[in-house]
Image (cartoon, rainbow, N blue to C red; front, side, top):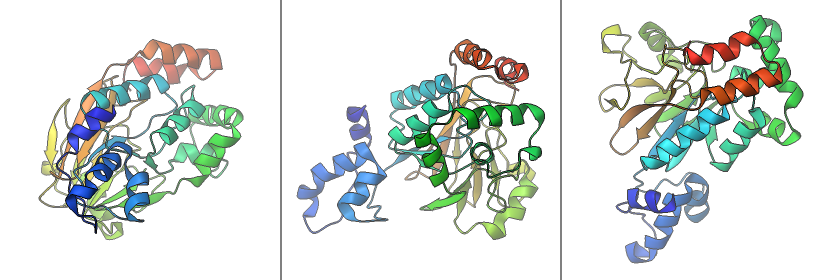
Amino acid sequence: MATRRISRCWSAAWPGPGGPLVIVSLRLVACVRGKRIRESIFGPGHKGVFVSRILLLSDIHANLAALETVVLDAESRSAMDRVWSLGDAVGYGPQPNECLARLRGLDALAVAGNHELAALGSLPLEQFNPHARAAAEWTASVLTAESRQYAESLPEKTVDGDFTLVHGSPRDPVWEYLDRAGVAAANLPFLETPHCVNGHTHVPVVFPASGNDDEKVFPGHEQTVDLKAGRWFVNPGSVGQPRDGDPRASYAVLDDSAATVSFFRVEYPIGDTQSLMQKAGLPGMLWQRLSRGL
């Protein structure tokens, strides 16, 4: 994995008093380990001239089999210089602690979704449908102290460079479904960066901030969308519970140098997750829908 990441970062140039020959080894370490070590070398907020491919994850929903498959697929594409997680890593699925631990291990820049907040008791469960409420109650009952502490640390909104990260929308980071170009345009006054990455709808899509529905893109597997012109709202789809009729795990890769985002789908062992959900006593509808991608 380290070799692949270094090969993607060989052309990065890091300004500093040591000059380029001295900085070379630091540059490679920064590419391998991402934001945390980069900032430990150069100071908080330092970005350098960094060629970076960012793995976009959303709505993992405690589906570890899907998450691990996505990570392996992204690594095979040398597409994991950094990781952003857009909320709802828990809820519905059978392995919330394992998924949160995996995100910590990936040093992901993450935000909270409505399911994290529900499991923490920060949202009234009456706002959820009966199946989601039952899953939230089960999740709350199995969260470890470490998982709870991590979930509590997640902001509802954060910014990295030209992108705002939220689960729902800039206007309502927790609940709003950004599912139409008009909704994207209505959120523009609340967006302080050129672009936004969000989840929540479980459907991969790119909306223009112009509100023009003709410019929206529902991307297919291995489709790349150019973000250079205009302002955009990017949703990578759901890792752990897709709802666009395709049961394959969905993710995207943002190339912040080329200003493009590429979308991918990958098959994972759905039956393994379904078996764990049944053993946990989670509602039948929640595990049955995984096979249909609905």
